[in-house]
Amino acid sequence: MAAPIRRIGMLTSGGDAPGLNAVIRAVVKTAEIEYGWKVIGIEDGFEGLLTPPHIRNMGVEDVRGILSRGGTILGTTNKGHFRTIDVGGRPQRDPAPYKELAQNMRRMGLDALVIIGGEGSQGIASELAKFGVRAVGVPKTIDNDLYGSDRTFGFDTALTVATEALDRLHTTAASHDRVMVLEVMGRDAGWIALHSGLGGGADIILIPEIPFSIEAVASKVMSRDFQGSNFSIIVCAEGALEKGGQQIYQSSTGTLGGIGSYVATEVARRTGKDSRVVVLGHLQRGGEPTPYDRILATRFGAAAVRELAEGRYGEVVVLRGGIITTIPMAECAGKVKTVPIDDEMVRTARGLGISFGDEDLTEMLPEALAELEAIANDLQADDDPSED
Ligand code: F6P
Image 1: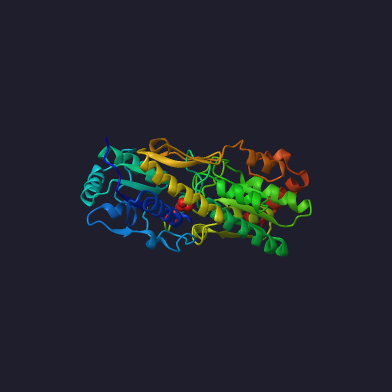
Image 2: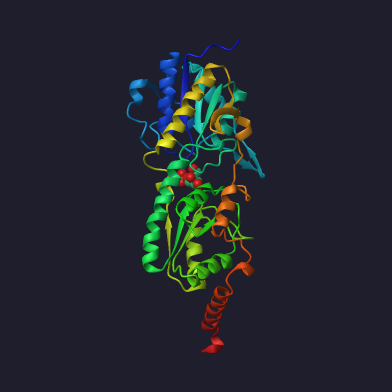
């Protein structure tokens, strides 16, 4: 029989998400109050368990007042020794840090780990099992794209920030008859763009799952003008891409971003309308979690401790149909829950006249198409040196 648990470690890994501190608090309180265990906080993700370890004792008194605080009091890292490296097109892991971590855990008398992180972190956790590390995962990502869970904490906060931004952009867009493009997070999945687009009344929603054509986007904007709405709101996931195109990366940082600016520039050029872009970026990840995220994070943290107490390792706690349950770590590692293109919310949005930029141009207002063509002809004439 496996040794009973008396002392557990806990770490936060990957990009932060509002609600991490609520999980930390729930883990510490449940472990101490319900089971009488000691909790050791590991700093800066898995890195904190390498030599020399960065750890601290965590009791109920150490988690006072953190329920509503953004970020993570333990610190986090998403670029460390544990990530996979590409060797000849195949992802591989260096076993050395895994061995070192397992050894340090034994030295410190840690019986198990609670790993709060996204799919990459759950992949690391699942690999650690091969080195004898017992762990339970808590899923985290503001993108809501963790495979196997209906929701992840942080998403509701991000969505709230994005929706508020859309509300604010509406009034200024309407005052100036402008096109406003809001670029939100969402590398592989457009959940934030889709939900905030519906909640914030966007006219066009661009997501990675539905590649768009810039002609369709411009046509929708122009059609709205002809129908008497002289402004348009576009919400665009950072991972959105044109049909046949690729995601856009910023050359300065090598990180995803710039699609909003591309859309604003192209729409302005094709429609002649004043267009602006707002990149919401990390504002979506910072600050206080919403009540929904605090509650979900608390339920996840408490459930993770119960899993360990019941001797179920290698599982990730998830939310399914309103119930907290678990799935094997290996099942969600490396997988992304994308927006199904026939999702009920996509269908609802289309029914409301919201464009995803993939519509057939023949469905657009003929007057709008004629106007776009006239603008294109003017532009071509301006560019043609034989016209000088
Ligand atoms: O948490 C996921 C995410 O929000 C992605 O949408 C985004 O691309 C990424 O984090 C950016 O994170 P960072 O700037 O920390 O690398």
